[in-house]
Amino acid sequence: MSKSYVKLTISSDIGYIEFFHPNRNSMPSDVLSQLVKTIQEAGNNDAIKVIVLKSGGDRTFCAGASFNELIAIENAKVGKVFFSGFANVINAMRKCPKLIIGRVQGKSVGGGLGLAAATDYCMATVYASIKLSELSIGIGPFVIEPVVTRKIGLSAMSQMTIDAETFFSAEFAKEKGLYADVFETVEELDEAVITLATKLASYNPEALTEMKTVFWKGTDHWDTLLTERAEISGKLVLSKFTKKTLKRFR
Image 1 (cartoon, rainbow, N blue to C red):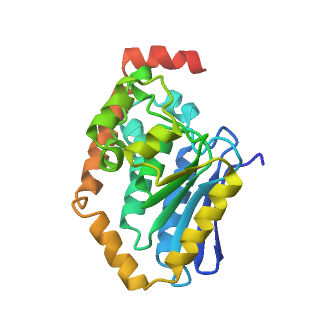
Image 2 (cartoon, rainbow, N blue to C red):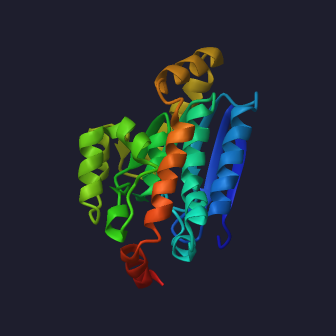
């Protein structure tokens, strides 16, 4: 696999949304936009009762935002648009009327952790460690903070944000509530995901939609909040500190 993609496949009332990028499943703006559209499409498709979100490959789940785009940002307006990419995906996921199961086979960094936290039920392998590295490059996990804090709590989010160069284990993520369960192999993970998705697809879809509304109560202001957070990051990425730090990644 050498080209990025986002695809939707349907099997037995389950919609599988898969994204891929050859650079550790990082997410450039075009892939994020495709992901938003695909989530909305699956949410509006009556043939789909439940959604599974997954990434391609067998290693990293998602390395977060594209560093190539991050380095290229030259003004605050472009920065806001760039950081709004994950905001748009998170908002699409929370507003989707279908429950979304996360299938996390490997590491998640920054925005990738935001994607996992925005699922309604997430399962992973023992290799699915997590990291919030943003402070180490001079910005912060502003856009994804609300969804990460909602899932694992302010204390754990703060710990990860401050200890920005450490990968926290999949067991840590399970203990804090990000993962519902952790499996030794990808095969065991996939079996558990299919089993749960199949059960959910057999339930009353109206009840599932109503429960999702309950799960996300109190987040109606996130369209505005996450856009404001994107603006903060869009300004910080232009700072002398961040520009100097990013030169190491060229």
